[in-house]
Length: 466
Ligand code: F0G
Image 1 (tube, rainbow, N blue to C red):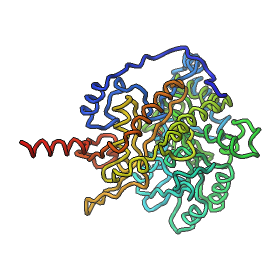
Image 2 (tube, rainbow, N blue to C red):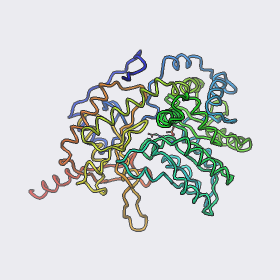
Image 3 (cartoon, rainbow, N blue to C red):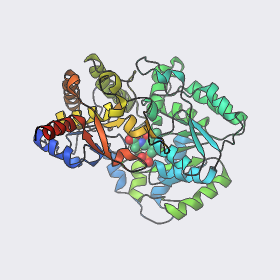
Image 4 (cartoon, rainbow, N blue to C red):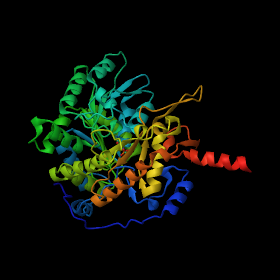
């Protein structure tokens, strides 16, 4: 039996909202959960990014934060930790993952070039596309079948990668995201990472890892590959990084910190160019956009993420949420991912077409019922609007992500979450879709205003009787 391998030293009160308060919060937010204030949330599963609880060791290290502008002791501890685990020659600190992505893309990418990845995270894609290059996803075929489990659904499709590499376009670098957030938080196999690396290197293309959840990926490799069953997580991580020529990292995930990130490379000249951009936009190369105390929290957190008991608990708690939802008849992406459970809203709500955003409807109802915040990962986030016709094509999947913050929620809070989602699922036929009444041209999911379609028909009926 797996229990939480920690005890609680500091607690943060949760305010229990009433159903009426949540209804009001929803209306005020235009039914967009990004705009609901956190004070009106009971269980916040919006993201696992920067939302974790730090350990007593991290807090103790923060007290030693050296806030020197240049060459601080905290920087030395940060750089030493990153080099020890990740093994790259150059470490460039940034305030979070997307800053590392921006520096990498703006330094290496040009219009017309192509960057393949198992699945680009949305900020990675946006940073590559902002340079005029094209971001191409080549996930393994198993990833498309949401319902059928496979141990390494985060793999890259090696044949498709080869086709991109040999397709005639210039490839500034190739990438693999571990675990694959866009593909359900699924891990990539060591063999697959090594093979992708060989393909890229044989063609002189630098191979990068988007390493946000590197420790979770290492744990899945250990558990699902007999050859690694007895290998310590840190050695698995080191082997994984040995296949890469660089990485981007958001320390808000497996850095176990609330802020932070970095960019690594083995290329001296590239590192110099990247540091020039860093100085322009983030800060001096020995702190990036971070305070000394933030560097300390990451330096300790990177090792805590590799603790065997921690990862055993982490995987068990996410799996627990997924198993109980699935046993209650809620279709999820199988198997449960490392950091999140993804509910398949298309299968749960077949009566709501993609044009009426079943994922958004479900996320709203889960909040309304239990004060639980999740995030739609479907046509609101990824639907594409044709500029010429104004017509919208739906996303490949209609998912709702329940991301699990690290070391934050107890099992009874997860039990509550299961109960509330099952309550919504029990009355699934009564759920109605939503429409978008206001949206910005890009990244609309953050600020779009929605209207429940049930409201609209009620309003139409009211108008008809007056
Ligand atoms: N890459 C992956 C795979 C991510 O999941 C994220 C962030 C980033 C890069 C960017 O890092 O937020 O520090 O700038 N994912 C968060 C999420 C936001 O909710 O999945 P960042």
